[in-house]
Length: 400
Image 1 (cartoon, rainbow, N blue to C red):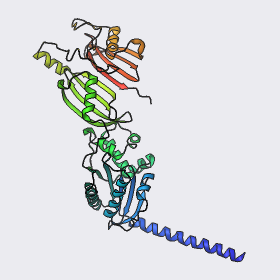
Image 2: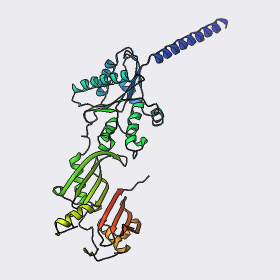
Image 3: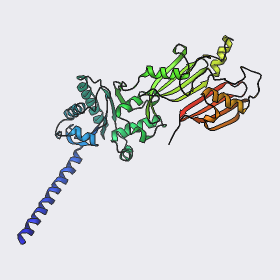
Image 4: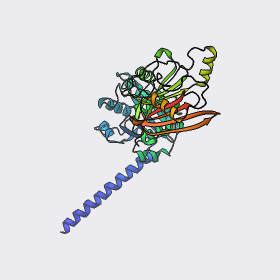
């Protein structure tokens, strides 16, 4: 019994010594960390390096990253070599390919000059590696020095680098939610950043995010034009950009035709119209009326729309209204309601939450007509004088 007790004590003492030594090594390693490098694709990997840019520790920040780092011994390797090995493993496991070619490189260092130098070197290293493959790299490189993103990273269970990128996007566009952007891959975030309204500071972008997984800008335009009931030859000032709305990647399509300006959100995967808006351009209409009196205010009248909701059809925009009766002072709520329903292609019995309100805007009578049908919310502004549809919004109903 005495011998067994001695053996147990010896084992406990040995374990205590090992733990103490391990703790000292960990403490010394922490003291030696000069820079933290994070690579994000979907896997998120962190490299802790010393002031000679040699790796002290490689950390898998999520389950996918464990697969990427499996079998690697990176301690003591220089940062370039470690990044080379990691990129090779990302390619091997299919996390970086021609469909998702974006990589986020984040460098955190109290010495900004040293951090910037390391960031530039690693960006070049990644470019060289991927240039030798069929993948055209798209690299987002950033210097991270905001301790405030730690809380976001912990709350959303993402890397600090990805949290810093999301924070940069939110600073220029507060319409997004951090929790929604956190769900996106780095390639999707890169596509969102390609939208001019999301131009962020202090993020260096190299290459272009691949968008071949989606229907493409041309098909997005076709879907919008068809829904609006306009011909491509009659369209001007077209802009198409990526965005993230309704929990989906979308194409924002903006254009003008005749006396109207249009704004569409098209599902980037299947071409579904998620949002449509048309607004009457009074300045354009006034300019047109000064140059011609032929067909004023009826641009594209008579065209048809094959979409089941007929949301964008101009052929029926004034159905049931008194034709161009400029002497009418007030068409009334019932007429405004019938104009909106006819343009949308519904009867009153087919819609819910129908609401009609009369308003005075700059001395002009206008009617607001709102209703829901087929999972979409419709909102019209109708001129009380002649029944012209001045503005409309059609948006997929928010089930949340």
